[in-house]
Image (cartoon, rainbow, N blue to C red; front, top):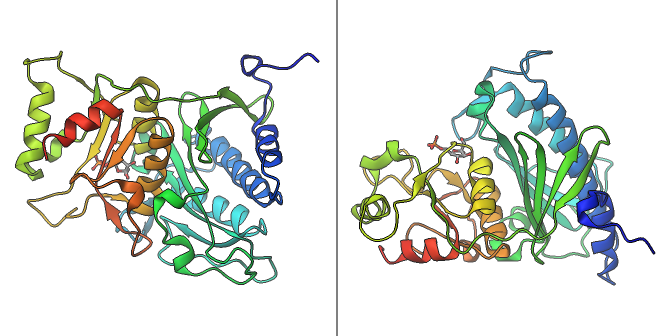
Length: 340
Ligand code: P6P
């Protein structure tokens, strides 16, 4: 039989999901259906991101602030509505959480409750939207505690440690729209072919290089960092030893992470020690830090908090809990750990 090969770019995400489902004898197709609803919403959001600034004036800010106290951009709000609608009616979720919504999102009246939960950052990096910089959607899927239950999910069904994730991934709206995900058996990447309207397998086995030359951190926060963290950054820029690293920082987690996943390197977001702005770090554990940590480990990388704890061992205590993050190539993070 004339088997198609990844380089033919003909294996669609839908086909990939079905083939993965067939490998699990107990699979009911619920996860596949959930992912298909997620992918549908991602295609809609990608279309709007691509035409931002033309019609409907989807650029710019609303007059609202989200739970984080951040100005809600119009595209943020749009993406949140699209993902929330598509996911809560799919029949396979019992609860959902979104960066844009303060509380747990219930399944609407008249729709079935399923055995999964999802936490999502609908449009991360939104402060970059108006400057046409890459932005992304991040998602984290867990199984509910009692997978036989048919009732609405509870907070505890979402507030689970990262190592229990059933699936984690992101969509990056960059020079192309890519969906990168892991179901615990490695990391795969799909590129949206707008002419076909399908995500096609383009990166069948993504591995983070064991070390890299890139470091990504917002150096504008230097004076807020701990002395140990300042020493580490000074070290990787010094002329002693290896060639100094090169700085690459987009300010959009999905874009910074995606580049480092492909090229190798380290991304760091520590906490403020000199102010109360981000005493526990800025990034959110449930729908930014934990999914990225899952992907990093699945790709052979390492993901820890600024004080060296494995991120996937952390259990969130509330939906919008913040965490520090040091994530990237194994050897680079191991080098960082010698400074704390
Ligand atoms: P800073 C975007 O707002 C975000 O949540 C992440 O996407 C990004 O990594 C980080 O904040 C950038 O934060 O303080 O460097 O602008």
